Image (cartoon, rainbow, N blue to C red; front, side, top):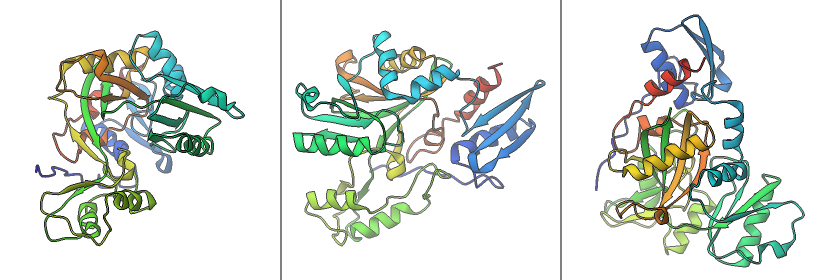
Length: 333
């Protein structure tokens, strides 16, 4: 088993900012550019360069992306339209609005995925749905967070985040769902506690702690396990399905291993929405197989691209992506 290479240390004097903002601030300071903190609580800063002011929100939201491109990426259904126009493969799906007729679901094939059209961080996203009852429950939950809900076919595989900056892929991270590996001594709860060391409880840290909630308990129960259960040395278990870092997932750098075919897909997806800075989520069923359209779908585009997963992955190289991001921002006027 490969060991973690996680080395994040908060930026002294700027610990209150989200990790991605800290990374951009560190690059601004390295370049000795004038920096202004406009609103620390909202991760809003400004930098001066060649007589121009550049306002940056959450590390990557800036004039580098147009308003229309940002709007497209924030709406999952609108994103689908622009990916379709560019001929980029995605899961078949349909859009539901409040008051929809159940007949609209007649042609849904299981397994399925349900997601709100305009939320992030995996909020109310349900995957691998296998029955009508599960589907109805997931749709109801999604409508609690949005007035529009997307239902689409489930595509099995692993999800990767491609960071595209000015048409080039600068980093790729595999986001692995929250997991632990046994050592033959500690219980599941103790292993969770050990893995949580050095992780945060919010986005001021690149990796967040694994929270033991009902979803974790449900996953353990499905595996006939309890928090008090010990795991054999080398025995690895997953604690939930979703791979979001916000729920304790691991980011693993795979930039050098990923075939160029998928890097080109990511670049094309960013271009389809007019994004100069973007995090592109792609599910690939087998990236080691001969690359083809049948092996992937593009899931979504993210204009607010999280940088910290690429600089401080759970395992892998620091890609120092802030250099390219700040170059893009400073060249946007």
